[in-house]
Image 1 (cartoon, rainbow, N blue to C red):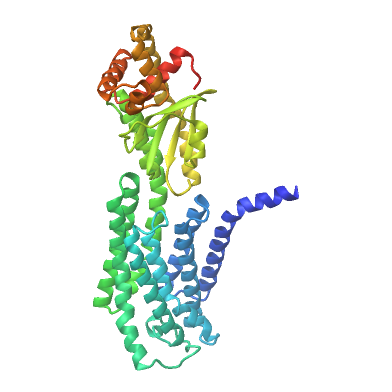
Image 2: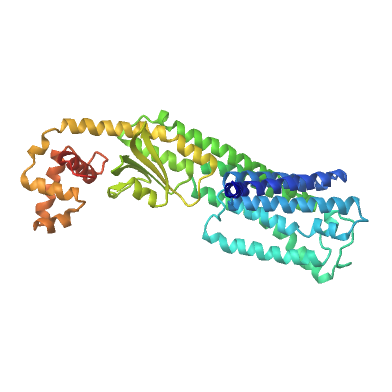
Amino acid sequence: MGQCGVADFRRRAPGLVPLAVLSSVVVLTAFGLARGLWLENVHNALLAVTFTGVGAYVLFERPRHREGLLFLATGTVHAVMFFGRQIGHFDPGESPVWGWLGVWPLPLALALTTLSVFCFPDGRLPSRRWRPVAAVVLALTALLMLLSAVWPVGYASAGVVMPHPFSSAVPPVVELLWSVLANPAFIAFQVLWVVSVVARWARRDGVARRQLVWLVAASALSATLLVVGLLIWGSPRAGILSATLLPLSAGWAIVHGQHAASYAALSWLSHESGDPRDLPDALARSIAEAFGATRVTIWLGGAGAVHAVGAWPILHDDPPLSTLAALRAAGSHLQQVRRGEVPLGAIVVERVEPFSRTESRLFTDLAPQAALVLDHLALAEVIARQQRVGEHSELTDRERDVLALIARRLFNSAICDELHLSIKTVEPLVSRVFTKLGLYSDSGSNRRVLAALEYQRATGAEQ
């Protein structure tokens, strides 16, 4: 029982930590509000709760996900700033460290917000080209944090009436450096929000692109209000206050995106009216868009050999026969498709990040839809085989030899070597085999795989 309890705790711990952080932020915010209502500091409370709430949700769905960790850290920093500013504004008799904690982390809060936008929604930068940009953001943030930690720069605009715990005055050089760097940096950070989201939007499609639209709108509005506030009122407060739209829009995009992805993936079949032979590729495309996958492959077959019947992006080369065990060993996400207890095939999704809890449920729910498609293909193959009964007798001895070598997964050049024939002799032989088996080049199928399966069926060879 003791070992089971430890294992259960380890399983639940990744979800308990975000909940504990969220609870701490809520408590800290509540204690800060108990000091009094200061409208100019309310935005930090809103940012604290919204960023932490969205981060906790992301980490619940995907434990240890980097985007969730960024949101959680951003919300925590804003909670500390809110509480420190509340004390620094309402209780000047308290320790000056509280007021210092309300001002000093501002560059860090903006930098974490910027990185959260850069990495939305998968926790990675839009591309490798953004690594130098992120490095500059971090370096500039470190410099601004150093200035704010040692001297009381930004105290006047923050509304903190406490003295700085380490310095009573700001040297002219530091004041000049802060004025030259701080506001332009804050503007640049928010402009980069829009640029990074647009850059990621251009590289995505489907549900992922619709998710990013919400963040584009929020980033653009916040950046516009920041610039307008600085130009008209000489304060970034309007832009900072509107930054609360970022976590709210991100949370909405995540939840709405998951629902939209689930609906699109589960309802795709009702919208398909083209060639039934294209259904496997259409199913693969729908799944790839729902999961943001690099590749999705639909496999047909039982406990023995399986062959690819659909993929997205569409396959241009004939993939070899495989087995379910080999597909599982490849490390991709695999969902076996069954009709009752009868195995029909599998769906294989290739992508870097693990599935969230919602995506895992969706992956399981897609199996019945895939079963309909694979049942259709299996029935079509049975009908085609019945129509070809006796056609093996029409093959010549040489054509039977060629078919046997195709079933051994040999290509034309290897067949030439095996039969000691030229390529000009083998290619027509292979073409006649396909024709007599009813496998035409415009069928959209892997003719070598289907020929091998037909040979195994007719000869009783093991798969």
